Length: 228
Length: 222
Image 1 (cartoon, rainbow over the protein chains, first blue to last red):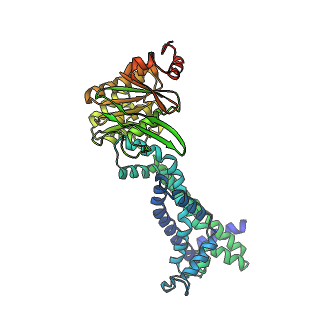
Image 2: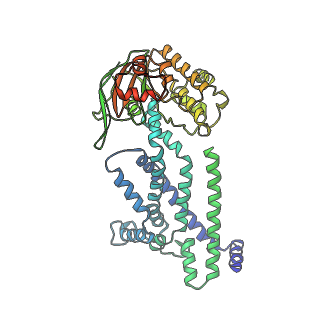
Image 3: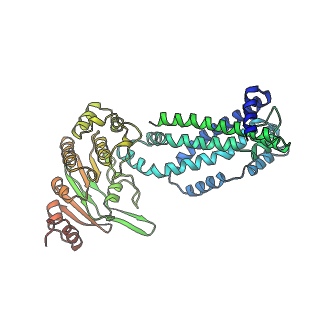
């Protein structure tokens, strides 16, 4: 373990270009996919939590089920859709960072929706009754409800980011873990381990956890400041 | 103003059945009854936050209603901003906060208030605008006696200034006696008694009303 930590430190300090590339692809994939998932999932989650309509429960069950979808299954579906014979084959997105982001958005969005739906459903009735009692219209009520979700939005983002950065099944299937192109931290760890380079694998693992820690600290600080 | 007859059913269970009622402008009508008797449901149906079995408003469209629910939501912002949510008259907000002794809490976040303070804030918030019908569901239940009396005075002033009718849901029969000219008694989801507060609280016709009121010693002596 000590050797791995030493190696991790050496790798970072050496300015290794391949490592820099892996870090860059990882950051691009994770930040983009988690942000898109948040932007898509946020209104859906709030709407689902606040509304009462026929079929709502079925939608909630759908998103909760999708939340537990194995990443490899998501990767497989994306692979079939975007492979040469698939309906989106002409887009030629397979083995690119773009398809990795799309796969992760599909994987993470249900997590965002289900998480926010649970929070909003608990407060929506009280917010709605209070707002209606004050003569506040539906759009302003929606904005007030969104403002109430500020704190859970941050924790949901952290959840989305964590799922994204730790994910390996979908990105390796649709991205192919191509060096200098689609190789991210998790797929690189898998590759190095398969090659027998355990120390390098553990070193990358340490860097991965360190990145996750830094993002968590940053988001938690923002959460505290904005939620005050 | 007329309040249409209404009912509310969940599945096969009817939780409220009530005939047509008339409220006069400037009147305070207390709604009393045991827990689960349908008082709050009735208030919600009139306020329009709950849909009656036969969809539609229970009062005419032209009637403006302001409603303070039993658990009024403290929005994630300062006390002052919460109060200004329902109107931008800062002078009025300041006056209400002063009367309810909230001035020291102006910048405090609503979420950090005690139950009584939150209730005072909710009352100030609902009294910001003029209306024709003010519905208050247990507005002083969480307040201490001194604050409750100040709140009652504020409600009475508001009623006199605006000439609006007030529907006051309360468990506090002394409060009902102090504030209301008329009273409604709900029991088991039905309106059992309606009339002057004096009659309903002291000389009720129905046995259920008498039994309930006896717990409050001094009311409805046989």
